Image (cartoon, rainbow, N blue to C red; front, side):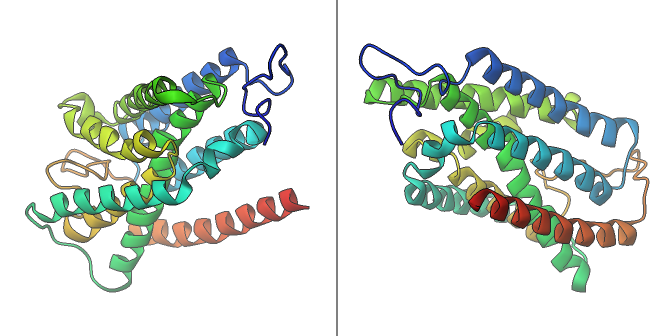
Amino acid sequence: MTSQHLGKPAAGSHDTQTLPNPGRSLGWLAAGALLFFLVPWIGTDLLGLQPDLYYLIYFTAAIAWFAAFVLTHAPALRGLWRHHLGYSLAVGAVVGAGLAAMVFSQAATDHPDGWQFGFEILWRGVVYGIVDALTLFVFPAAVAYLLMHGNRDGIKRKLGYAGLALALSVLVSTSYHLGYPEYRDADLRSPEIGTIAANVPTALTGNPLGSVVAHSTVHVAAVVHQRDGGSMQMLPPKVTADYPSHGDSDLAAALAVLWLIGTAAALTLVARSRQR
């Protein structure tokens, strides 16, 4: 990819067709932060949906938003996804292992048996962890990359990118968690610590995709060891006696399986169409 496509103009000139507009990038960020607040606020606070039904709505909205963002900025973001990808995934694995060890050091809670347990590991662990990582960590880091026109040459700009990506991630993560009633009435310290940890791959390698490995790992650990998220509440919404939890869990599981099949098919078709 040429420097112009990364937003770094050649000496004495620049291509305005390929430079991302900062105002547009910030608009995507603001709209995304608002969306990620409204979905949990409406789904849990106002409607009190059964968690798996709520996740289905949240996953659909989040993936659609992230896909639209990435497709809109595909040429400008190509360098971000390729940059030190292997290192980022490796750092994410180390961070995820450390966070998982922290989860397993806490008191365990009961979990369902049989197929329901396997379903929760896949749905609340792997899928929920991936979607959260894409919306709360990868999306803000990509916006930061666009704002810097892909130019992270030199130690100062590398540090600047790491700091900007973290700041935008904290903003989006805070907005998202405030959509859940349990976080509005409690300390946001735990999710913010998690946000900082998830941004370690971005800070060390310049590639945010390692956060997907880290966050999905800790989500799986939370499902296996602490079904309701434990003391750090890693799997909102928190179902209590006051939470209405409208919806049937078996129906939610069936819809979730259909959602997984449909989403996998849709993403495969999109990928194939873009390769032609």
